[in-house]
Image 1 (tube, helix red, strand yellow):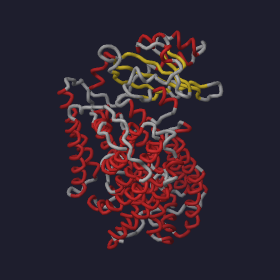
Image 2: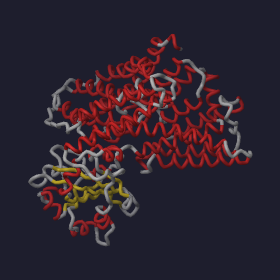
Image 3: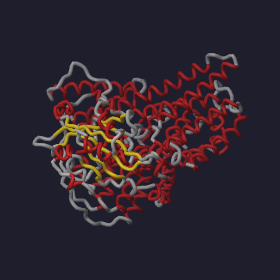
Image 4: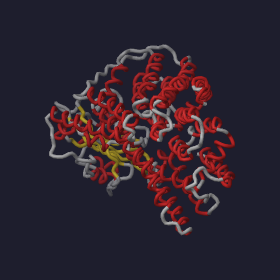
Length: 617
């Protein structure tokens, strides 16, 4: 964290030093030396420092940056009002909002397609295919890396990393060395694959939407991106043996309409490109048209499945009634032992080491397994899954981010604010009862008197009568499952950066980096900076600066911002996600050991780009 803070301070010290050299935009008044400007910087730095601490302080990343955006624009408006100008701030924020609206709607359409493909078992079927092939560990290393490189150009690197990470952990099992190295390989491959496609990363999408690089031109950085992944992979390859892991039996069938959704998604990408290249309309218009096509397809799927409602729910959320019994257990005047035992609901508890400490009578009846069999073991997954998987209590105990909870409880899960740290989820469990049961899970951490987490409690509720409804395909449910925290985070980032640009800071940074240092040095630094600071605000800042540089340099910064995050595990969403799912195995330290060879791949990608695009530089 200290590193991030120092880099931010260095960046803005350089800004202050160069502030007097003017701005790149005549519309921006130089207010870099004002108290309001310094306050704006301080608010942004403090807010952004909280972002990577999300998993530790349990504060969603969108909240501090949205708050900071509001403060920055208040400060900016006050300055303009004191100058007697009541129009400039209004027009400036409208420009930032337009930037955000295009990005928001584009991502919403893309996320909905990805969620629809997940719901139709497309990604799960791919995972099932891979884990049943009987590949060697070295083969799994290369296959998962190659698939991550190939999937991330059309799906985001986070989804790609989680999908391939599940394969790696399922096959690798207790081989911690293999899992750690394979996860590093996935992070590098997913980031590299996303760099040569407008759909592969938020930064490439922003560059395309700004018109800095045309769609077909992104493929100029395909070979540099490939070099960025292959060179570290070749070094890591020799650290993995060729042993054959135990072959797993897992077969997942695609749901009706799965293949049609994949075709529609590819068609939507083509439509977005055509809207931009031939109709001269924003790509987002094409994406939303594609979302309309998915809406028609979803209606057909619902007709086929025999379920057409009078209307769709727009934001599908579960009710909060199910958390009240759990709240009563945790906040009872009785001891936790008695509260769990006397509960009419099936309840069990685990300690911080994931060992079962309580398994009440209702839980015995519900699962058919006695407390004697469960107490003192970590087998609480057995009533629900065929193979070892974390249950909701395990995920809550480790504070797993919502994307990872969703990875286990697709379609239906919800954070419940009535009880600190509580989550609710639903899943059909085929092994319970004669025909299986749709079970609602509610789980929350158990805390001691000092607020420390000592374990977790999970409550079960039979919702079998809702089984049919839960299986139905619904477009609006897939929209509801979009990464809303991420979408709102982008709002905060874009408004913050837009406000600081209006103060004149980005013009000063542009002058220092792109004029004094030179475009090549600046763009290489941008990539290194994205390893410790999220590449989204970095790239948006570059686009807002809009420095005058060659086409080849715009391709270079697109490449470096996309692949630079692989240098550290915290440098990309893919790395952070895998640190959560492979907790204690893939860590910051394990990634850092391989940073030198990843840096070699980073340098090779830049050299490769200069060779291929020398005429454009």
